[in-house]
Length: 123
Image 1 (cartoon, rainbow, N blue to C red):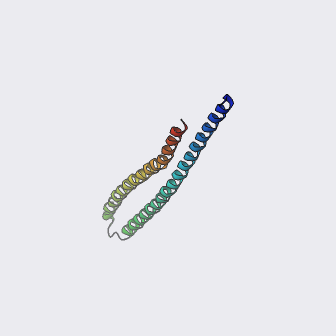
Image 2 (image 1 turned 45 degrees about the vertical axis):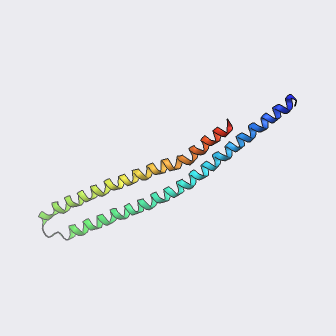
Image 3 (image 1 turned 180 degrees about the vertical axis):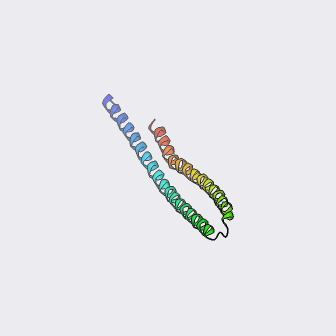
């Protein structure tokens, strides 16, 4: 085999490896996108649920204020509402943080795995 044939073969092998690596990377991006879509959907559903909880809490508070029989009862109604709101918002923040972390990790995992495999194949 002459030098030109060896060079041609090496070039072809390198091209095939790079092509395979590119295909693996594209597959990783597709998996990552599919995972992201599902997680964003979960996030939207969670946000709608939280908005509903917050609206219901506001209406409950308004109803309690409207039914107060004595002005001296207002501080108790107000403080109870504030405590419940704080607890609910704290829990919602935890849930959103968890979803955000899940989005970040699940989104990057397939992409990182496939890029890593692509580099292994290319070398």
